[in-house]
Image (cartoon, rainbow, N blue to C red; front, side, top):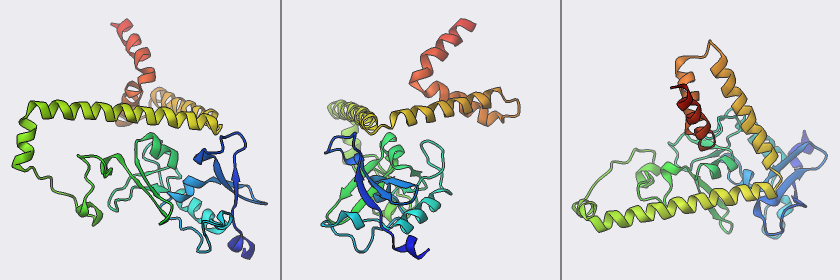
Length: 249
């Protein structure tokens, strides 16, 4: 036990990834079956870096015992995005209950804030993204109180101005396009890190689970409806399901 408490994670880099790829950095517990992504640790809500850490010595950044404790904590937490356990990355707003795996947070368009100098690594779910105009993020949110939306006369005047509305729509469209670019870049990084096979295996497992729920006569009506809507909401399957639906009527 004493060895585990004092042991440090050793910094390693994936040999297949480009040298400037951030997600390629991993930490390994030598002599144990334990390897973790650096970002999965840095953004975990309950994890604290080693007090001995300095930018000059990255090898002592994480203690094995602290990593093991954070993994155990995550076993009780379900991811908002994939609905699986291990969601150690929580929204920075204290009263928000959304939690993710780090890569699931990226897929859900969560906002990532990083300050390596101060050692600050924060995640905001889409509802509390400080960069979004309609976000619920403000000082009241930080204190755990629900914000009260206010509309000033100037805001109402702008909303009645056609040019303003058009410009806001264009900005929203550009932002949506940028989000798509982010998702595309994320999958490219997953490919470089050799994670695509694992991701598609998870997708297949989820599809098989959905099939089992639809075939099971004991599935509740609510769960059945949720499963059906999840399949129709997925653009990859929408055309197949719509075509099948058209052929039946």
